[in-house]
Length: 253
Image 1 (cartoon, helix red, strand yellow):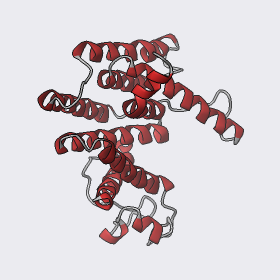
Image 2: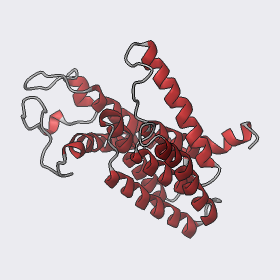
Image 3: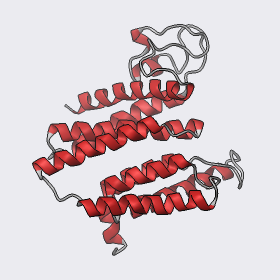
Image 4: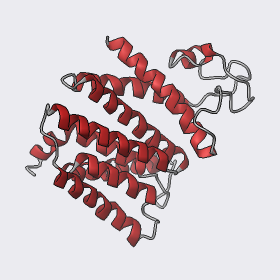
């Protein structure tokens, strides 16, 4: 069963890569078969086997031998591992709840990677994320398998995300944060509630600062260089979702 969950995740990772390529260009989600960005050759099914094709081709196009971005492999592996982690961590869920949670992971990965590469946040993906959260929470209210944040906590989490990230966006006039970051923080706050959204934002700032420092040390960025914050918000959101309660206990919050 484990290998099939990974395969499913890798396949969804391949679909995610297609969207990450197409959305910034304004292409339709289902805009035909995938093709090489360099030579334009349409790819055959055996060129699109998740993980396997990239490794077999050694990261190069079969036809023009142009490099295939490492991101393709990373996203496929990340999606496979993420699906496995969700499946193992939440095996007590109803199958539909687990699938919705996997869908949320898929959407947030697209949001994070696309923002990292282009500094653009797909509002369409943020809306899909919000809809999946509504479905996820509705399922919990039906099956009542564990204690979830009540409506007040959801609203408080949303307002916290808006206040903290939206405040930085407003004060800096969009220089410290993009409005897409505000949207991510708001949806994350609605999902996690309070105080978990505080944990998510704290992790986002710490991990973002660490990544920025590493890039400066490696000479790939300067002190004034802009680094997309969305990916770190997404990372912080998932870290808080998985381990938020433990972190809150550690800090006696």
